[in-house]
Length: 189
Image (cartoon, rainbow, N blue to C red):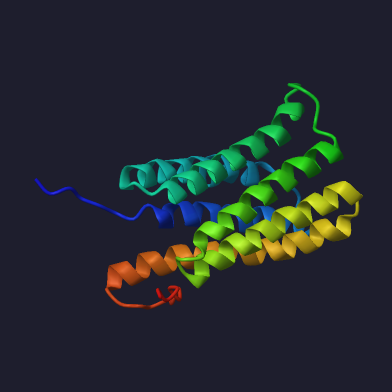
């Protein structure tokens, strides 16, 4: 019996990418934070990435497992941090606490970036731009200066679009059997 296999990475990348773009359109000041972003954070940014991570586990891909499940849980935790206080459960985190939360995610992402160095330029860009995004958001929280959050929003849109691009490149290149959207694999020595 042959086992069917599919690449779960595009699911996780698309969930991450689209949700990141939407949140950062808010951070850039285009619209307020509402249920659309929170729902996307729970469903597509959170649950879809966790599913992709579990599927990466079945493939034996530790990096994919760690990345997708961690960022899926990031989205769920972020939604809870925003929603629980609104429901009267706990206090909203202070700016300094949010800054450290974002900075730790930046550190995690920076270290995960090194795991991309033998993959492709597109994935490297996703992780490098995501690390920068977390550090810019942390700077906005540490300083209380909305300028940094707006800059982070613009950079986050770029980051999210890069993840969405990579997701679509992997889907279309596989489906059509040729390179439609290049991802620039790193040459092996």
